[in-house]
Length: 369
Image (spheres, rainbow, N blue to C red):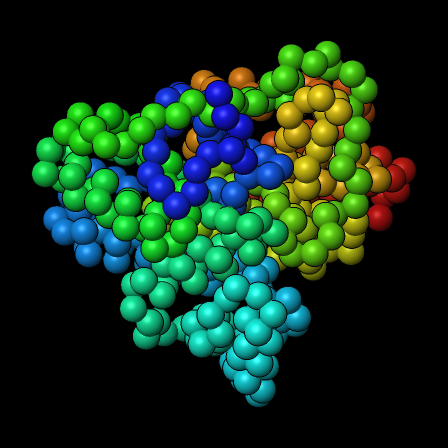
């Protein structure tokens, strides 16, 4: 068996493991692994996109592009204070991008255009080959990783012709982007050139089998925007194990709400107006035991030992539900309270959510104001 850091990049392989176990093992992103994004195309969309290799590639590149734009400025050091194209904003990010490219592997004109589009929008003028390589480098750099990989969930119902186009598109992406393309889900019976590998998964807080000893938190928020947090989904699945704006999921960045989670963004916007909410840290990693798998916390007040979790639809599945209960127990043993809210509750009744968090924090602080 291979660990995530040993899986190949630059080629297509099939993961011979359960898809639910894979999802749990990637939350948070394993140390040493590439920056792993999750692509979940629906059958109808895939059949439409996969009529040609070029169509499939264009669809995936749109998703990767949207993720890179949403993660700005994590991949561009020095751009954190630039939030719009007004004034010298565009010139500033362009200068920062060219400076970054001059000392690394990035292609300067592409990185500069991407930085400008992160502020002002608009389509890319570069060909697919340049975009694939550039986006893979940007996404890897967002998490301080040396490479990127896309975990593709193959839907049921692809015919022989669609399977061939699908695999050819995945091979194009792997080769041009120098990224891993790892397949899970439905088998591809009509294509026999994709080798199977079996990664060694660590699932759940006690995934290594180590005894549940005294838990310890990760401490202060991880340094810098590139520190990995959890993965959330980018579209219909936002609020689940990954977050974003279509069919692509990507990890959160430690220290900030996930840009693809409407609930996290809404809660942070509300908390930013509350004096009592100081001391919070988003998407932190928590280690129950030195030999155990780390877990990722949506929102943490470490001094008050308060954890807030925002649960999307994926938390209702059996595997995720069981993992949530296990991690809650470990946190409670160490003196943490876990306050769970549905993402729909955050979006529709945020005042109740704020009131309950405030009540708990004030109780822990021994104050009423």
